Length: 90
Image (cartoon, rainbow, N blue to C red):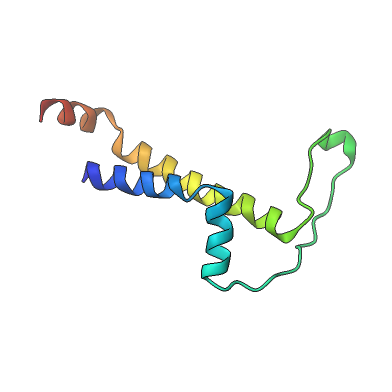
């Protein structure tokens, strides 16, 4: 079970690159989409933060967020105290 979770985390980590993102778009034959309308708050609230200017930039961030969330949840689930002591004893 733990090795399967590690394998999934490793595989997802390998997909977290610009090349894999572009490969996924090509492989799934995803058609270009329009940029969602984003309301920019006044500069005094956001400082020098930037917003995505192309659909790829916008959805790349979401793609990476999903991979990071799954990785974090798997790590939290399988890196608990009880499982760590069980792993050391076996």
